[in-house]
Length: 523
Image (tube, rainbow, N blue to C red; front, top):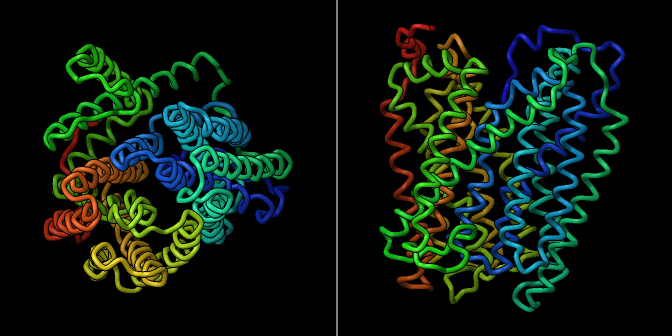
């Protein structure tokens, strides 16, 4: 999440007449978490149960999460235009509408492109909501209450993780199990589950229209100008389209290297030979150039230039970038393919778990273990420091990947599957704590702490996105050689992909004196 500039925090003081934070903070962060888990996690289960291939699942469920990576680019627009309260209410209304549209798109023949477009829109609206909600939190609560309610925020965000991939998936699976039901029945189950999610979100929106306070400091710096908002969001859209084109070219190259034809959802939907789509190359290059210029213009407008210069001029920057991109690369690959692994039948190398049981294992047991690991990780770092903690934490993040290798070769029962998920999520929560603390650590030597942290978290999300895209194509290629062993050798490959991230620990700055940045002219 993006931390707002100090200028905003100092621009006003929270209203002394604000209602009790218990009346809006829990619901605000539950509604912040719900779109995130629906787009990033529930969508994987949905597409798998509807028969979408793993390579397409990995590609598109990773790309639609891109708005959360680059939300810093339109953060100042939310910061300067209208009030945070108005942005929250407006974004929640639009997210609610988009969730409803996605639910009605599921039973249609063109459900894949329609739902992907809907999920992408939800991601964009949710990223904008995140900016406004985090700023509103700072303006609505005194500093002592801000610290106290950090745990409450996290708890209710986790509750959304249980409700989305847990409760909603269980509902969809109970209505129609993909193993026995027709495709139409499965689609109906997902439609009902998403409509229930939409209804819950609508109740939260209605509550916030009444319960959200109006802090004294929540005043717009500039008058709302629809043309300015449309222009900036148009720039963002252009940049995102440029990214999609670039990733499309990279995917084509990677797929060609694996000697396997591609059938991309949007651009190759007709099944035509790639040579017949050569018009995409010049159009794509134009989009990339325009998107690059648009991004450069946005960086200039929001004052990110000096911060970016200093960030990429810091000591050992190549090692730092490698660490950010590869620290959780293997775990991110598993994050995309673990659900297909659970749902696929034994003859395809999976574990044959039902959709309902998958919701119980990943949405409840997994989230509880993840939360416990995160709490313990924070405690360990606070006591021993990042330098002494990082090796145990990186091992806890990566060693549970071996359990997936074991599960793929031995095909354990439900108890064994539950143990694998619990250990994996606990290790992930414990190891991820070191990752986030290190990103804060390298920001301490900067004159632009907030901007540097935002850049680091954006690069973090980029690494996870690339790992997610790669995971689907790699698993599909291995399964093409031997369908029953595709997942087993995929998890072996994942273990190998964890090595580069661990090697970066020998080169990254670990002491405060290492955090001196290279001289930069801030022109």
